Length: 351
Length: 245
Image (cartoon, rainbow over all chains, first blue to last red):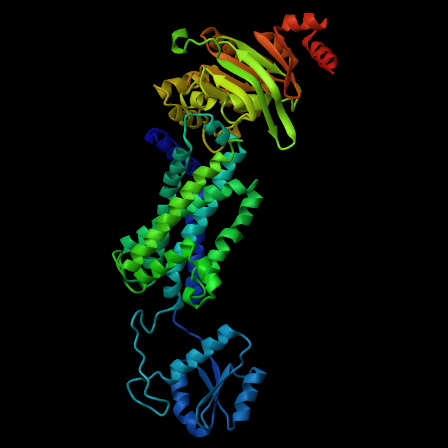
């Protein structure tokens, strides 16, 4: 191992980025754009406004002020059939029937996401005043972690930070190394004293610089601009992110040997990135998945990054927590395996 | 300068080298020896095995059979020791970097001493000093070829492998290239140069006419012409190829 040759490779990558201002800009601008979009969509806790059909009259006298207090619009109806009819016709998003017990919540039901959103919005509105037991019930909700106003954005931000870092660095490393293979420069490097390990390490260092800049910018934007609430230490969040993106760069180098051109490289995104998007707990909690899917999730680095970042950012775990340590350890193992695969993939070139 | 290079009988000693890629036979028992200080020309049509042979000398192709030695070492060891300089057929450079950034990078890989001065020297050699700060992607094809040669010369290799080095180079510069190759050889470096341009043949000390992965004939240009009774090397090549069949 020669530090001089490794540093030469890293320096060259930094110089290439410096000359390619647009890529440099996109690394930062693209994730911020998507984060802003997510913030706009899910930034505030459930501000769904519903048109609610409420019956019967006696129940409406109790329920209507609560629903209106939560910002919903209430229309009073006399019979249960009328509640159902209004929802069916689309004149109301949902209905509540309190003419008999148990109280019935009527929803349109064709869109599961809107359905559960409407149900929880109605429940929240009807249960809103938990200080005073009422006709609806004396339920008090307590949060072990998070808080009542935890928005979907607060929940998604940790995994989005991980996802963007992984996605962009994987993509850039794949295409950069593919170019190295295609342009003949890899051949030239292999016919020089540079060793394969030095080449891969140089790439990790060179890309690492930009990966960390990107992570810092994304994290800073998330916390200081769109003001995602977080607990835990920023240094721990940053460390988890760093270990993850180094693995992404190494994986990109290895995967690039399976692509013959840039078009093919782009098609590796769905293969490498989408399963992680679906299975790593970004959309569905890992523990709720079928055991086969859970087994797949357990070998995806993003699964561990998500778990660690949520533990740190939402629950306030420290780096020394066994769960966080385990997650970082698994990600480090993955990065080491990807580095080994990258080194071996270069050997394949030598026929 | 000669003492810089190890004293061995052959810079290249390749014996009965065979290589196939799937069903395609690239090398079918090629034997070539090149002495230090010699310019050896590999002449043959496209697909005759020239590039595969040069890549084997650079350690990039492992022969299926036969032996390849470079200064009495395994080609990969020779590469690791910085003995070999390889100029690929297409100019292999980083398009986003400037000419001198490219050269500084390759100089660093080879641990070239006084790199700045050396980079300037080779830029002057290929007449690109005035374009040193140009981004490579903006250079003309001929300029890139020259820069690619410069990158192969940086570390003063004892074996210089040139795969069709003068494609797209104008006649004036082509002559300068050859003067430079001759100067390198006179300092003891061995040069293996491939070409399908027969008029470059006269500039080599010795020629190997190669087709189908084997040597058709070997000798000086005059030798080969005389042997075939042909007026020029192109006719000689055709006559020798016909005689073989």
